[in-house]
Length: 305
Ligand SMILES: NC(=O)c1ccc[n+]([C@@H]2O[C@H](COP(=O)([O-])OP(=O)(O)OC[C@H]3O[C@@H](n4cnc5c(N)ncnc54)[C@H](OP(=O)(O)O)[C@@H]3O)[C@@H](O)[C@H]2O)c1
Image (cartoon, rainbow, N blue to C red; front, side):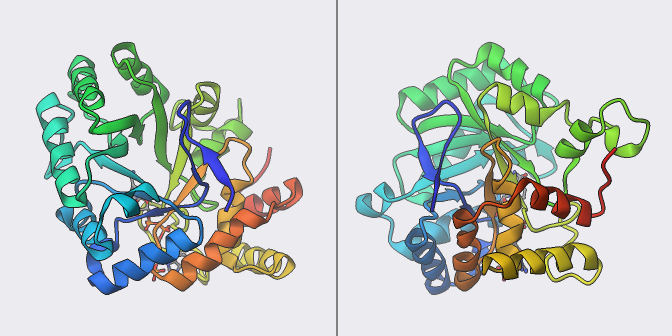
């Protein structure tokens, strides 16, 4: 598994990472298999959030593997805070208590990366800055980042926060590409030209923030998986053609498409099927050609100007 360097940090982690949002549905035995298989494949970065399974995903994760110092050293753990029932909360009090809850459930002394999950309209960046400084000084959190933020929201936080923001986690798949469409359709009159995220892709590259691609197999927001989906015959035909060429699965090609982007994007895959993760990990061994990357983009229903 190739490594990706996260933002301005010293962290170099497996370029394919595992999202644990769906882990709360597993037994301890199943979860242990998922985690051990991930580590065997070089997938050593795990994405959590305080809200996944209402805390249960973090709990099962640590209980399943019997978290201890030697296991902890083999992995990188990221978690998120800021989403509550019916509202978003970036208050200092909530950030601090959320991290304490995650540390307890994960049975660890530190979080490698903490992300603010979704923008809070009532954010007071001074408070976020205070919370982050306390968490850094106490050693509870090593690095910080955001999720689903646009560049100006990042700039507002950066004005106050002392630590680098190393990550922005955003939805991206070959079937969900607003951040790419607008860059390809500059100055055009049709929908793909609409800039929905204030050029977050170019901003992140300019500022050395790693983009993590969440839901890399979904079309729309949680509308379902596009791989093997009869609604998308052209894309699936192209995925299968390239899968045969590179001797990997169609799912691996969908991840190779994200990895081919030169912006060092780290996909966060959500499969809880060990065999599937093993197959997907092979995406790290192949490099699509420039033409193949565009062919997949077009097969997904996009046009070029
Ligand atoms: N920051 C945010 O706002 C945000 C939002 C959503 C998610 N996330 C993060 O992103 C991670 C991934 O999200 P996700 O689970 O929606 O992503 P995903 O990897 O796009 O989807 C995984 C789901 O698709 C299923 N699936 C069915 N066929 C598949 C195939 N051929 N290839 C791959 N998967 C297939 C998997 O089932 P099997 O388990 O049976 O394989 C699993 O239930 C989450 O765990 C979370 O960490 C972040």
